[in-house]
Structure formats: C-alpha cells, structure tokens
Length: 211
Image (tube, rainbow, N blue to C red; front, top):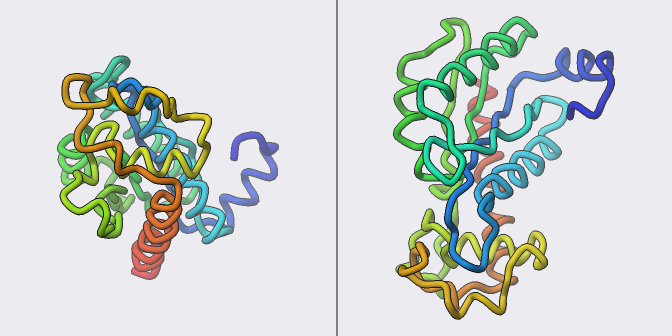
C-alpha cells in the first residue's frame, strides 16, 4: 500500500470504509517453518481481503511482532503503537478498524485492547484467523492455531513451497515446539484452507462494514 504516492494513498483513503491491521509474531515454529510464519499468514490474508473488497478496505500492512517470541514487543509498547496508529487512521477518516490476528499469543492482549476502546470514535473488530479455518477431515484433532502445525504448514506449502523445509518436517515434533502432527500437511489442504478462510473473513468484514 505505501509504495504508492502520497496523493494516491489519500485518494484510496477517501474511498475506504475499513482499516485493516494484520498482526503476527516471530517465534519458534519448528525446524521446518520460518520464525515469521504467522506474520506471513497475516500478510497473505490481509492482501486477499483488501483485494477482494477494494476500494473499501485500506490495508495498513502487518505488525510482524507479537507479545511473545524470539523478537517481541512488550504489551505496553504494542498498546502505544496500536493506539498511535488508530489515532492517525481516525484523523484520516477511518472510523472502523479490523485487527486481523494470526497468532494465539496475541489473543488475550488484543481482547483487552479492544475492550478498552482506546480511541472513542473508532470501532474495533478483532478477527482471529485460525478461528475461521474450516474443519478438514484429514486434519481432525489437529490444533488449528498450533505452532508449526499441519494447518499452518499446509497453507505455507501452498503460498510458497520454498518457505517450508520439507526435508526437516520429519523432525518436527513437540520437542522442537511443534503442536500436532506435521506429516499430515499437504499443498492441496493448504489451498482449501486459504480459499475457505478468505471467504469467511470477507463475510465478517463485510458485515462489520455494513453496521
């Protein structure tokens, strides 16, 4: 978004009804996935949603650091950062903001942040991406928000197979911080998850837009 000129951005803002802030993290996802896997997922979904709902959704770009991880932000720092962003977006005319969260480690912080309503004239909606994943029969029992798990790995295999160290998947287990059975991950499953989850997120954001 911010590769555009100042005037192009102001024009887009004039058309937009919703600001979209994707949030991820940098943490251990096992020996087979990049540490910023959830940030990559947050960025992917935010791009797909904003493309589908253009020009009504303004994608701010992801905040790559969560409240825990290899590199993280203290909750009070993330609070100030988000509040500052909301203040700026409010001045630019955006009064509805979606916090698109890709990592369960951010969930409790974001719930508290939203409940405090930091900017009075700005409505907030928190959407946890993994809560919108479809039920996949072959992944029954697998944690949808699990670190380095089959749901996350399947999606990254489809988005960009080069991001996944497939030769290391056989070592990916709980001893290396992985939740669930990574051997169940498949490219075709990732495509299904991404397609259905994108539709679910779009529907919820459209509903928020109409309120």
